[in-house]
Length: 470
Ligand SMILES: [Zn+2]
Image (cartoon, rainbow, N blue to C red; front, side, top):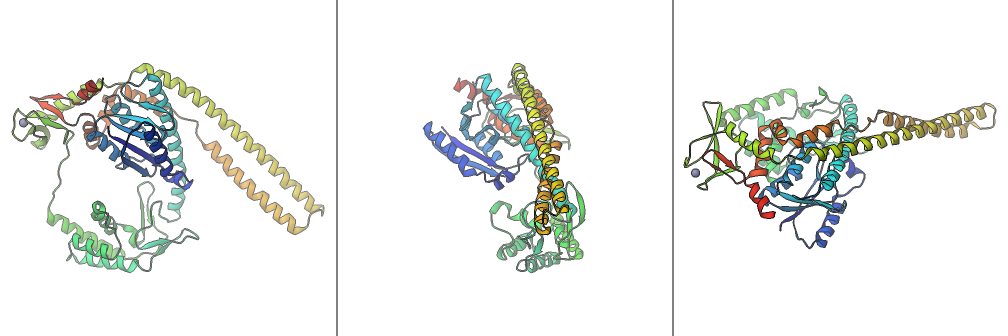
């Protein structure tokens, strides 16, 4: 049996000292107890609610190739980063694609898991997601402030710059900045291929050879307006940065021009990704590939054309029918929603309590400050002692007021999203319909890779897995 470990920390948790190592160790101990050998470890350290390719996606790819794989995770809240991920797990496990063992929570999810375990999973997931949401809101607050001050919102410093550790200001990296400028100048001539430019950038230590993202990091560099002093944020718009430019806007424009000329010269070599690319096989063993007819209709067939073309819309219908069979029953969700409601109640109570506590502390401090002033006026306190005591009390008061503001702005747990998710899982077809082509392709690969298409009929392979395990 193939077993893997999945571990995750968000960037914020990392700062607080949560470690991947500790999670991995807990999982390894659990695997040892089960007498299972770990084949691979997937891990990620990143923000919690961003979707994209990452350790989680790699793990899904692994599951796709190793049906019935065992996945060890420390706790439910480590497993998924958002509802999309949770939905995928909730569909994969019942389909027999994998089994999940939560090392610390002490339960497993598999094809025949009792409803109680699913409930446990659901509740923990929703709480984790709410937590992630709050985190991302807090982070965003800081981002906006930084952007308004003309500073880069997040991420590593741009190559050619460094961060002054004393005040977090962005400074020119005297060593690399001239090389960055040189690279732009070379690019602007239009005489060098991107591969040649890559070679220079590598040699000068501006990019690193982590193979697959070499080209994209050079691309990012040469298109980055940050170098002429401009700040661009998807969320907050554009403005002049507070940092010193390395190149002129004119040089930057010339580079964009040169690159776009080059790309046009190379011609478009874009390949289409269809919904069922890499999912289906023909009876003859050949892969089924998609093609566009008349610029609009997507058809599928094997290279030998054993059967007539199959329309994508026909395949979609069949795939949706297969999905509908994986729906999670309504009753389960109703129990979960009840549990969530009671969770919401106790959370609100705790919040009220916390606010009352802070208010009391603020009151006490205000009294203390008033007393200090009195004592100073009546001459019981010398100037110096008064100043020290007063400024300490003021600082404490400020901190408490900020804390109070935070507590009051914290929204009560919101489970409307969870209820929406439950609806989706009750009807995975809706979930599927909301995905983009890439998302659908991943979904289809996970659920039915190596499914057979025969004379226009889809024979999903996951059912075989289910039958073998039953
Ligand atoms: Zn064929």
